[in-house]
Length: 154
Image (cartoon, rainbow, N blue to C red; front, side):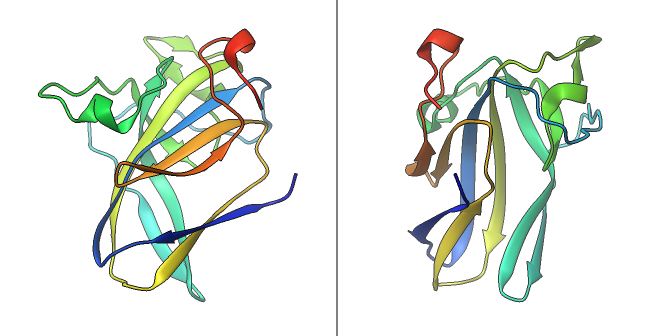
């Protein structure tokens, strides 16, 4: 499976990527630093020859597959930890316990893009299932994330 590109029309203003639901069924080899922080995520958005690269701290919701409606309530779900993206959660600790390589989680971030041009999302070859939502709209999906192995389809 190669890189996937999904075209998305994004209006000038706030690009709100409320969540990326990912189910990892195997441990990946990238090193992930523990980033338990009380600060809101501040993803670093860099332009490199027309590309926008997202790196930095994302809100991480362990063992929860959330959708945009879950954030349209008076009390939003509590953030489990702040996650350094890109990376894997294999080295992340929550409540003093290291996370296993298998499980499910939701990642959430938001950032501004000052453009009215159509844009695309390029994702790497993942060892999991993923849903990518932007401004409440499902714009990309690979497999079907599930909260248990029997519900997951990569």
